[in-house]
Image 1 (cartoon, rainbow, N blue to C red):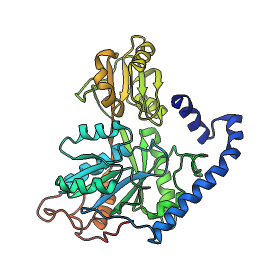
Image 2 (image 1 turned 90 degrees about the vertical axis):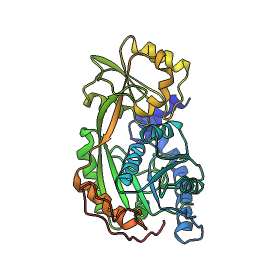
Image 3 (image 1 turned 45 degrees about the vertical axis):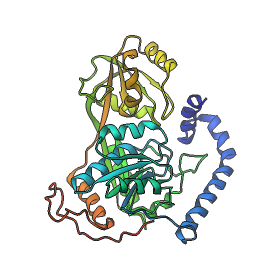
Length: 364
């Protein structure tokens, strides 16, 4: 059922559902108004300190978004973890654990970093501190206001429909104005084809009164790997693209950008757990062709490798220039207090001078 509904619902959100979408809009709008009223009331209670946020023993960076899925939180959270390591911190990553693929992927990328499943994020931060972390990156934490944080990073995509419509009429969890409580807006660009649109959206958001700095964050195809993460060659000739992500059309576009001749595409619901029936469908649809899939899907499919056609994993890698990295480093320096213990003694990577050691440290 979910597989049958997910595609049409997203098409409706983007105004691509034809007459049926036009008829559904007025029916869903009252529910969006009720949802929006609840969101605004909850945020008001936190803003007025009527509801309180708990503070953990170590600094917290939240990487979240305004919409339901598909903005690239997982690779951006990875980038923050690795950037913090470069700057002398010992980070941990905390996630509510919805969709085990993200947790598995973070553990593969950074096996020495504690990756913790914690629906109650504050407990996860406390556990991270006990495990020796001195800072925590929280994946998908913008709406989880019970946890105070030093820095809120909020992601958007140029593919998100504007003007924003709240659930269930659209994919937005909060109004666009909620970005005023963030400290950095990141507009992700999945591939070169979306970079210009991401830069334009970042410029528009950055000019809005009260909004924080906004940058475009390019994600380009990286090295090919096997399902287990080993280096692999690119597929030769036509291939089947298999994915279980929020925006499967983006995977096919990135595969073409990486030089793949996409003959067929097979999509499953976001965070789908594959079973024997799915494997049979993949084999049947491939019809002897090699398969291309994502890193998020690879960690779920690797145990079935022997039952699949030859499979190549399309990786994504950030491509930030020095100017964008300097913007992020400046905000990190302003928001994180205290600095890591060895900040004053180690050499930096060369992107920026050593940051100031003080910041406001206020949670939101």
